Image (cartoon, rainbow over all chains, first blue to last red; front, side, top):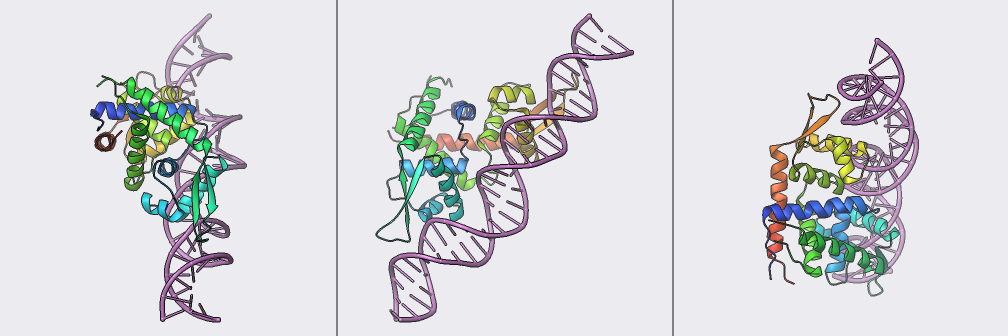
Length: 116
Length: 116
DNA sequence: GCGTTTCGTTACGCTACCGTATCGTTTCCT
DNA sequence: AGGAAACGATACGGTAGCGTAACGAAACGC
């Protein structure tokens, strides 16, 4: 079931959500960090640094840095892969799930207030 | 006519759009910068530094810096207000309008691909 | 076994943003 | 006219991101 939006609704939705996020988010994630976080939580595991870098079209240090920052904030965790100890498996956390749940709620709420 | 989204659709939409934006956007705007840009283009003028700062809940230097950066990129322009020369009026540009139009198209396109 | 490849991380120099405080200009008010 | 207030910009020290390049550890291949 596709979601049909008018141009005004599409940008209006982005406007409302982005503005509220700027207001409320003490974390202030980068666009890249948010993309990484969403990828980790919405796409089936396992997630690796290399895989995320390829999916987003960025270099590996970008992923490492983003995971450092978001790890300090409790949004993700890293574990070495025991089956191939070169790999690092990125894992979800409760706090990260809550963060995205709040974001989803915000998007849904703003969607309801839109007029074409 | 409100837009009804399931939690999965809401985050899925954000995921798709954010990811593609990271891939494609050579500009790499901050979340705050994007919020400012949307405010300027979606809310009726006039826009001032002070007004934008209040609306987004940030300090004035944040707005000044964002306008500096986005001004260099041609996304906005500034003009002194001749009726009160303390004020600066922020104006839209063709390039800025095109940028947001592309963003809107992207949101609409990704909305169509969603399944609940 | 030993070179080669594949991981993720780290180092380096650089740029851009942050918050706080202050500045110069312009307007307002009495 | 002259002081107070409002506006946007700037200065400052600090932090966090960037891309490129190099690194150590682990697995692979012959």
